[in-house]
Length: 121
Image 1 (cartoon, one colour):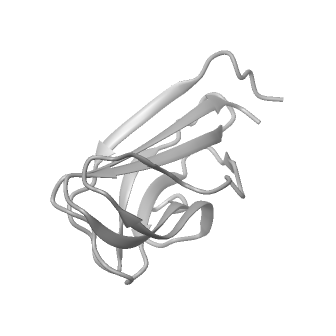
Image 2: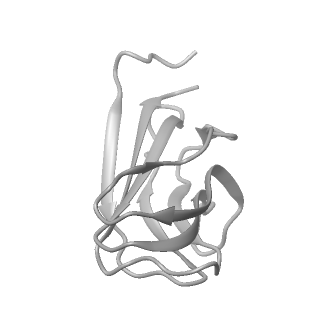
């Protein structure tokens, strides 16, 4: 079981995305992978996007799984929106974690995704 008392947070400005994905970070080799606890998204302008926190495998070039789904959400400017439940929380070592926009709209130029995690399962 993961140690939920040593929580880490990653925040990245992913910029504008339309029907595309962007790698955010790579899970380190040491530590036995990570368990994602939750994710949020914030953008500077109002809009609609269909967002997913995804596993991009070891190459970081293709989506190999969905970690959490934000679904199709209408975003208010500057208001954080939580992703839905984390469906596949564990991410293997050396895998990339990314954000995917699934062609429902697009994200703004300033679009920040944050996720929290603990090391291990």
